[in-house]
Length: 281
Image 1 (tube, one colour):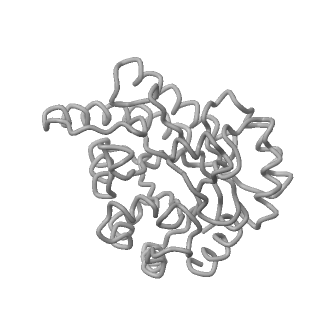
Image 2 (cartoon, one colour):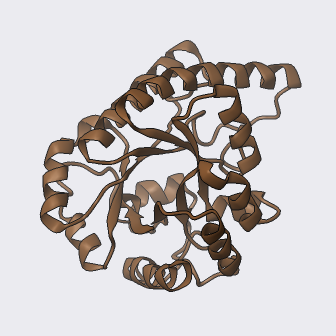
């Protein structure tokens, strides 16, 4: 198990001019950094990899960002744009020395409606076909796509681990895995630890943050139960803190962050890491 932090805490977008944040990630004691890639053209992954190597950091995961123009259940243009984007993220992941692209690889974030059963069935069929195509490409590159359920306020499509596993069964590709997030699980799962157990070996990534998106451990989440579940399935991949700060205005607005969760970014990052290491290792 290694511990990482998502770049959204520090900057949006991450570009070739923002590499200095990697030194802070290292100084805070992290093993890895998860780069949120808003546009693959924003940075040269080879240059980022060189900086990571110099600092002794890893980047096993790349985080996808799905706006309205990237939607595997949208119109034909949105579907094509999303597939092109995902394939570029796979290429970036390989160049960074990573092995998984994480995120809600099915729809634009924020899209939510009450669809008739027939329309929902058609959407699932469309997404499964599109995921099969990008998973074939991922498998060729030795990369996994980890599918993240989001809470009901951010998507109407996949909200639970069970639904993510259903999509994995439909797609039938060994490259498609599960990505769980403690914030979303706290809203949608009856039992977060049970969801982790149900995911089992399909769990390829875990985002960790408090129930309010703040510091892990400074909240009411059942971290002891989560730790036991991770141990039972022998989870040995990345645990990444994905939290946000009011200092990064674009992300704060997009993620509805209207107040500071903790006194500072450092409280979120340093204290959160200390808690996770003590609780999960």
